[in-house]
Image 1 (cartoon, rainbow, N blue to C red):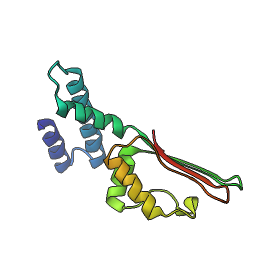
Image 2 (spheres, one colour; image 1 turned 90 degrees about the horizontal axis):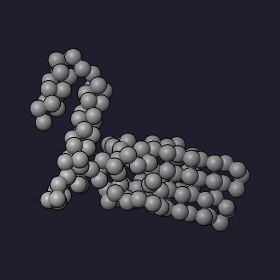
Image 3 (cartoon, rainbow, N blue to C red; image 1 turned 180 degrees about the horizontal axis):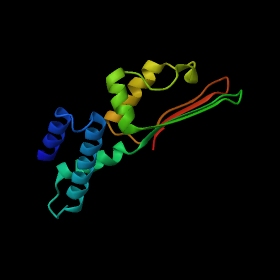
Length: 140
């Protein structure tokens, strides 16, 4: 915790940019998670295990694949860590809505947020429409 306070103080003093601070704090968090996992003993420490599991989930990718009968293909890959932050701040997916015509983006956003909160892996949505368009959303 002292390291994080020093980083924040350096930002306050203008010695570090916000981006540099985020990178340093992320590096500290990763180091802490790895140390907790490595120091795992026979006594099960659920807090350390949960922290390590969450960190690995953050490294997963949310993928959206759309294929149309016209030959149009959309393949979007976004890191879970980024998509989670963007959805919570804006409530919207960071993709163009014309790429997903005919899809209820609000329902899709809600479904994705629920899956992220539950750390779901695998298929979230798979649609084969009558016009031949296929949409797949999954976390891998």
